[in-house]
Amino acid sequence: YIHVACYLTVSIEPLPPVVVGDAVTLKCNFKTDGRMREIVWYRVTDGGTIKQKIFTFDAMFSTNSSHMENYRKREDLVYQSTVRLPEVRISDNGPYECHVGIYDRATREKVVLASGNIFLNVMSPPTSIAVVAADTPAPFSRYQAQNFTLVCIVSGGKPAPVVYFKRDGEPIEAVSLSEPAVGTAALQDGRAFRSLLHRDLDDTKMQKSLSLLDAEGRGGHPYTEGPSRGLTPDPSLILQPTTENIPETVVSREFPRWVHSAEPVYFLRHSRAPGSDGTVEVRALLTWTLNPQVDNEALFSCEVKHPALSMPMQAEVTLVAPKGPKIMMTPTRARVGDTVRILVHGFQNEVFPEPLFTWTRVGSRLLDGSTEHDGKELVLERVPAELNGSMYRCTAQNPLGSTDTHTRLIVFGREPSPREDHYIWKQKTCGQILSLLLTLSVTLDK
Image (cartoon, rainbow, N blue to C red; front, side, top):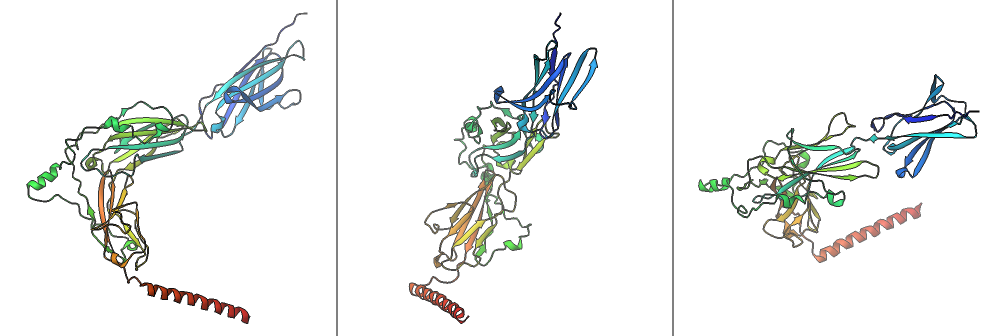
């Protein structure tokens, strides 16, 4: 008796990278001259330590072989087992194995096993993109050059996307800096660039610009931009009697010798932070020495290329200095003892980056005794009659420019004396008691 050993070969058809949401079919091909015993598909996780069974076909208990296709070639049988993932997810990324068992030709008690494997690479296009300014809000610097950094944040991509910047539609040729180690330090907003781009500005600090010197040489005065006259104010924003509309004063943009007309040198750095779901957050930091004369109203865009995107993803911002702050005061008719809130709730233009707001009182200190207050809102608690006619200045500034807006507080009525306060309190108390008695009387009548 001559024993003829059976043979079994198993292979899984390779697949290109797939995109989240696609329908994917895994195909396991095996060739044998024996009788099939079983087919088992596994999803391998945790570095191969865990195998999750996702499909089983047992020839002993099933006569259904619709999942397989076979044809006879000489004396061999060629099979194909398929597993379909209708909407692939990021979590489906990883290795898969196909295990096949056949009966030995000599005895049905012995099973011959073989397996094949494949790595399913699932790609995910970025889900969000945003451009922000680092280190904001920041003041306007007239006599000292300052570095400026735009940060493009791209999330949800797998693999990591390619991120680059454009200015006014033209790609920016930037000096690429080495990528830092992944971690919290890698995601800081560009403070590391300061030492790289630092320049000795001692000979230019506090020096008047050429335009200012020219104006003095001609015996004239430096030009100060006046308020825009071509804008029609929103009727809902017209100042009430509480305030007096004071013309806006725009700080003239006088720049000293450190401002150069040559193209700036841009520096680009990328950092990556892996997410728990297998995607990567990429931050691209573009840094240069800001020139407010040239960079104001410049359009910067961040674009993303990714194999799962049919066209680039984009986000853009326009660098704009603040202009024409809109001031709103509540209550609209302030009386002695009221709490008055003065708020900046918009500008005549879209401002980027976010401005820094500073409130001061012209010619005196604020009600709480401080010289200035930071924030979009100034709150005056229990205003006294002495504040009637007081003027307040709001300075709004960002690295592109600065502007001042003034408003005057009108307080109506005088502050009641302690005796009047007591009389008012008695009136309110008596009124409340009378109302309560009337309510009780109505109830008893019923």
